[in-house]
Image 1: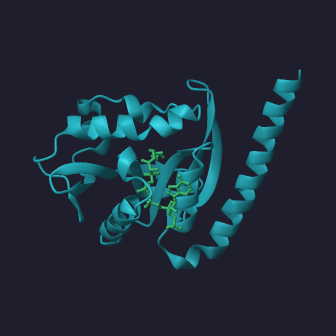
Image 2 (image 1 turned 45 degrees about the vertical axis):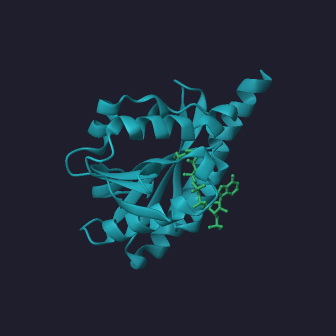
Length: 194
Ligand SMILES: CC(C)(COP(=O)(O)OP(=O)(O)OC[C@H]1O[C@@H](n2cnc3c(N)ncnc32)[C@H](O)[C@@H]1OP(=O)(O)O)[C@@H](O)C(=O)NCCC(=O)NCCS
């Protein structure tokens, strides 16, 4: 039986680091090597921050999954003010596909809903189809696509709006994303051909 709870000192940041590194093996095989998979234990702690929350999934005493939320002040067209940044999602390779991340995400969303934030956001590599599917299932809207020259892949910014009144805004964001996606893809296709 897997238990989901807030990280305590029983789990070290180095355990989290190892878990994230091994969880990302599937992405590396798919040509996506993201920076978070190579952060040191200290950098992970800093990334979550003093106000942030790190959740862990434990099978007995064994760490099998994690996810975090950090808080950031945004001033973009798609989000303004204090927002919840969903990051450092990982499930141990031998525990994947058993619903562990779904439990972690449910707990993270419940935790954030109790706080005064209207928006959650995250970055997902375009090639990370599994994570993108999960984002969609949990009501995240893709709002921006950007190219990361450091690891040569596209990543998508996803937002989840907790205020239901923003339906028209979500539709606007969707249209803007499609237009931006087409522009970026055209630019990349043309570059490939020339
Ligand atoms: C993304 C990740 C955290 C998902 O963890 P998980 O515990 O395997 O996910 P779950 O078992 O809770 O599955 C959640 C959903 O994804 C689907 N899913 C999981 N793995 C899948 C796969 N390989 N292919 C297709 N769908 C998959 C499940 O069917 C489920 O959908 P459902 O609720 O409609 O049935 C895990 O695959 C992982 O650690 N990936 C590497 C790290 C990573 O990419 N992190 C995100 C960085 S942005």
